[in-house]
Image (cartoon, rainbow, N blue to C red; front, side):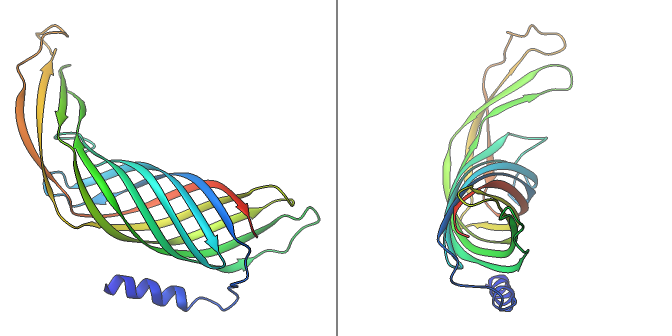
Length: 228
């Protein structure tokens, strides 16, 4: 809550050049993220991709995203998550260039939002061994709700009337799972230095624990319809 208060204070203290009479608009974008997490069994780096949609009414925004994140990049069971999230927040214009003869201009906005959603964690995929073998994992899927905050900068490049604007966003994202989860998985090893590729071991079983805190950065690009 302390972090949330700091974010709110920063947004509210932005220059009063921000306007509430901006025309309604909607946008769609695709993005990529990189960060770190402290999941109990697989803490380390994470990477992912997102499909985002937003609606804007004046300075107020609502939106949602569908994402895929990989939490175990190098070692252990390859844990990933399909993610569904919704958010609500503010987009406060802080700078705007003059329109040129063709009607082009750029608007820079400070953006911040509260976020909530569900991670669908699952250990599934393959790991290649140093000596040529392949470990294939299959496991349970467990949903876990999370809350978070997002804050950053948006650049909207407006083009001639009737043409969608190009929107680029850079955001810092923090998320916290409400509970952890134990994921059971099976592993089958095939091939290797002295084995044929189709020679596989009997399945072995293991357990990994997920759910915790995430902190990362994301960048996205898309189109905005309506406005400015």
